[in-house]
Every structure is written in C-alpha cells, then in structure tokens.
Image 1 (cartoon, rainbow, N blue to C red):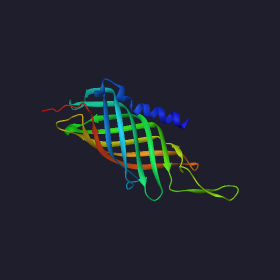
Image 2 (cartoon, rainbow, N blue to C red; image 1 turned 45 degrees about the horizontal axis):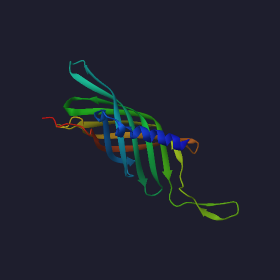
Image 3 (cartoon, rainbow, N blue to C red; image 1 turned 45 degrees about the vertical axis):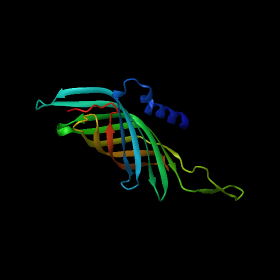
Image 4 (cartoon, helix red, strand yellow; image 1 turned 90 degrees about the horizontal axis):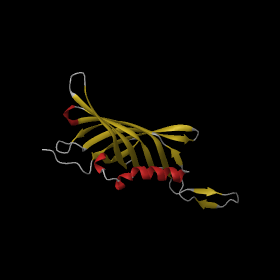
Length: 195
C-alpha cells in the first residue's frame, strides 16, 4: 500500500518529462528548514490548471494562476533523524503590483518517512540485533503560504519565501505539526527573455 501510494505520487511529480506542452509546467527548488533550523531541500513541480485575469475594484488587472502541485524534499535533524516527504495537491498564485505575487497551497496527499540513527532491539531470547532502516511512515498533509517576486526579464520566474505546515498522522496517538521555512527559486524551463 505504501509503495503504491509513493509510486503514484512519483508518477505525478515526473509526468512533465513525457509531456509536449512543457510551458504549462513550472518547477521550484529551495532551501527547506524544518522547525527553522534543520537544513534541507525541497523540489517542486506545478502544472497550470487555469489562468484567470480580472479587474479589481480600482480598475487594475490582476491575474490568478491555479495549479496542480507536487513536492519532494528532505531535511536533516542531526540530533535525531532524517525526514523525507512527498506531497501532492493544488496551489494558487495571485499576481500583485511591482511583480510581487502571493502563493498558497493545499496538498492533502502526503507521505513522510523518518530515518532514525543506528537503532537496536532485543528479541525474546535476549539477543541484541541492529534494526534495518529504523523509522516509520506517516500520512503527511501540507498547507503553505508565501510571497514571491517575479523577474523583470523572465516574468515566469520568481524568488519566493513560504511558510509550510505539515501534519504527521498518527504520531504516538497524537498529531504533530512540523513548521518549515522555505525559500528558493520558481521557474519555467521555456521562459523567454522580455525586453
């Protein structure tokens, strides 16, 4: 079951490779710090679902992009574990003035795997044995919100900073939220330079 779930999410993440209209795909790579200090990396992909332009109350145009989104990443807590995750869901990006944008995402499909350091167990005969790949899987839905700024010559590309909250379920009969700061670069491989 866990393998099938992971495989489906991986196929979603890497489906852009087989697509002809790659301009509808955006990618991101960024620093991912769990609990603000444990360093890591997050790689993401978005597929454009809709692009809407409208006039606000002041008569200025605003654009909202709605996307399918997926992320794969990890972080290292040097004192306790290595954490890896894979999430999928939706994102929304609203363009503001001066090339700024607001981003929010909801990724209800998520899987998280913790890897613990060297761990041993004692069997019924009293023998001590090393545990192979200690750690466990969690269901890990994710929500995030952030702000970015698009490039002047590459309007499809932008720098961003986001606050991510991932919930690990079940965690010792409880719910554990992980608060993460992410900052990085969001880009389209086919973006063209605008004069």
